[in-house]
Length: 319
Image 1 (tube, rainbow, N blue to C red):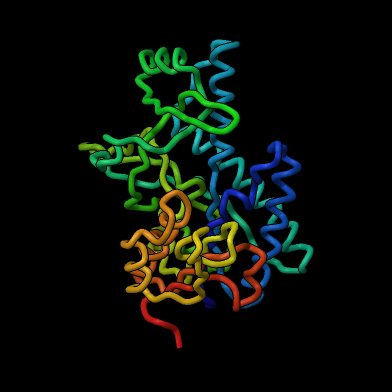
Image 2: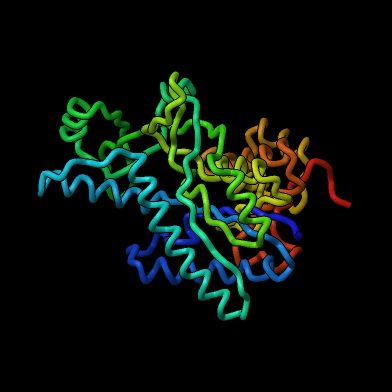
């Protein structure tokens, strides 16, 4: 059996910021991204794919709002919305990937798993919600929703619009449910799409019942945990930059191709990766290495077939 690689598809792999978000745009973006996975498949890798869902689950939440306001349709909770997005995006990736595989005469099964990811209900994140979801409301609307639904809001200030936006907790993932199923399928050569959008957040109560958590989980942390849980060899985060940079967009900006664990941790602790963009990805890569993974890679999708590109993070420097 070849190596197992977990590949986390970034948000821009499916939907780009300058696009309207039509299904035609998302299907074309997805196809373009998946074409770049062919080189890994031809090298003998078994693949497990994850994906972001930020724009899509945001749209689902806004449809929730519209349905409630216009037709008095009850809102669905956040865990159902995340599961909804997992199914829809997973289906799209699965269908586009089958077409790409057929184009290259590669016979492989592809399957999507709607994945639950366990969090700790006592995680401090539940007392400090920070993840912004859904649309921007006026102060009056936010106050009303806060009173009616118990939602928490923070002010949102952008160039074109300002107002108040709902925030939810983003707890740390601690267990990927059905990890053994994912591992078995991957070892059989099936390409598995799982833990989309960080997975559906759930927790286990005092009676060992699985309960939904009104939260969202970081996609890269969940993907790293999934990789470690199934014994993956490598972990890839596909984003919109070819390398990791220290002091990004500053005068002393520097691209780095190789990093070992100790240096990466030092740079992270010294604040040399932006908290709003690269730092969470670096933490996910370090987590994967800590838990036994051999290599993490951060790069653009279309650089995958060129081993000279991308930042590689290992426990010790590669020879």
